[in-house]
Image 1 (cartoon, rainbow, N blue to C red):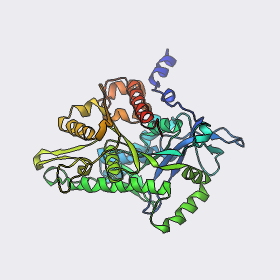
Image 2 (cartoon, rainbow, N blue to C red):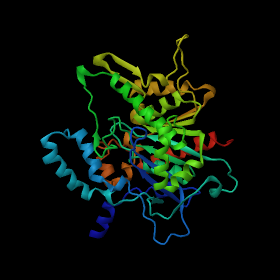
Image 3 (spheres, rainbow, N blue to C red):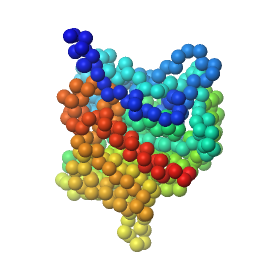
Image 4 (tube, rainbow, N blue to C red):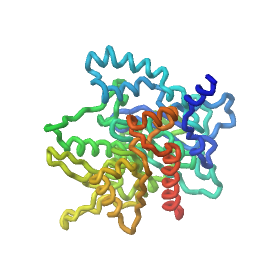
Length: 416
């Protein structure tokens, strides 16, 4: 009886069945931030064990270096107390450390993955090695996380894409929008709390989304070796010496078939990146995007980011975002009228009806993140409202999101 209760209490939604594709495994390479030219990146790519492998592969954890306490402390800085306070240092931080020891995600691994390091016997798989009929180069997906998030909350989405042959670069932004991010000098940067109430200034987010977009574009340039600054060569050489597999990946990427992807604030970031560089991005995947800012007490009511929206100005008019785009929304965001209206305007401005738009019934914002795989099913049912997870079956909702994503990508690239 006790064993049955324990089994039920530890029952999780397993993402294993979602991760299907031609690649035997998905390689996960964690690359720390380097100077000003690149934020931290988690790179997912199609992989297999090399013939010389003698030890079983080590699966990737959901968090880089399994730093559960590090990540939870960032969230505590947002929700409980600022990290500079004594209460945080002497009460919150020790409490979070204890919680991290029993947090389920510490002991879970990303299915179908192999963690790549200097000693890993991992082979990168090119398109031709995945399928003899494929002679083109590999498509790159660049993913941007949401506000208060990290580059470690959408690993299943990235793994699903990599299993089907895509290279996915998941960015951990350094602009103050992440809960906590490691910096190049070894320090860390916590979430930046902007003034609210009467002191609220939307310009803070307008400036911030541009910084995030530049980080996204810099990541593309870094992976595709398209930087204009010749001084970056030393970084290429050093990192390719440390990780020879990185050179193989770079050599096989198609710089004209990049996919912009993001969740929430990351969707807004991706939309702006594709607006600025429509010649580089072939399509966009925008998950529960934050496309409107409203602060009635300050008279703020703007589509966000403004550059992504088509302008009617006949002199300085812009088409805004105008590449094939997939919009998948939660029913929570559908219920915010001005936000959803802005999302529809953004989708409808595409020429030639090149956008698709869906709503996942009975879902909330966090249904798009890995938290649904970190928490036991009973906790999701009882704490869903607190965790911003809807009443829909979490696994089925995620499965629908991935199905729509692959239908959209496959349809767009069928002639490529």
